Amino acid sequence: MTLYRVALRQQFASWLVWSIVITLAVGAVSSAAPAVANSQAVVQLISSLPASLRGVMGGALMIKRPLDGYLYIKLVMYLPLLVGIFTGFQASSLFAREMEHRRFDFLLGLPITRRRLLLTRFLALVTAQAAMWVVAIGALMLFVRQQGFPVDVAGYVLVGFSGFLVTLVTTSAGLWASTAARDYAAAARWGLGIATVPFAYDLAVRVATVAPGWRYILPYGYYNPPHLLLTHAFPWLETVVLMAATVVLTLLAIRTFERREV
Image 1 (cartoon, rainbow, N blue to C red):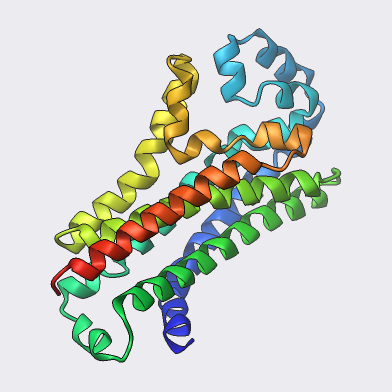
Image 2 (spheres, rainbow, N blue to C red):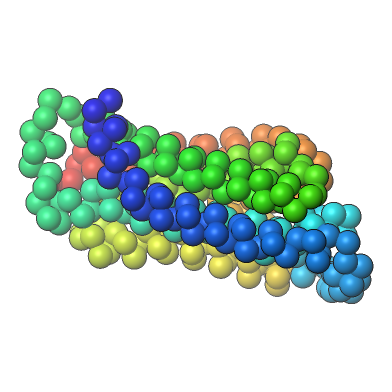
């Protein structure tokens, strides 16, 4: 537990900065909610777009619930990217920075296995990531309610859970990058790429509607807030697939770290 608390403290400053940035973004987007909530012009505009663009911009959600559709295209769509950048960088620095600066001698001298050390730090980062999602979704619902609109609590809880699963994969991939990279700069590039490149790919495939099935080889393809908000269906398939990917990537990180010479 001591190592876990130390790992949490090391991430607190970065977590606080990112949480404040996300909360400010939520507040800025929510402030325009009254102008959009009952706007028929927005609905007509969405209805006139090609099917691919309607899907990217919320589709039926924008038409049936313009406020939630607006929040989706302005903010909710990008939350996994924002949290993913935080976790990607944090995961990539868990070991790469300390190995580069030769601060690992003390940790490896403790009566603890490398596996336990890695999993303890990974658990602390997952805790910080989950807390960031709670802040983001909680702030969103609070700001919308302050604007005088009803809040789909169940729907946004499901959205937060779905986004958490996506960034869980990002975190485990960043963890592997940290154990495999030759130095911190390389690990940081991998951490940023793991968060941003799949998101850009998913967005491009959805807009182009070319080989849409390829979206699902990457985690962002399983993030579908409009569907969750409209149906309140628990994402069973997404949970199984993304948890399995997290386990595989974490085991790969453990294996890489145990074999690496420090």
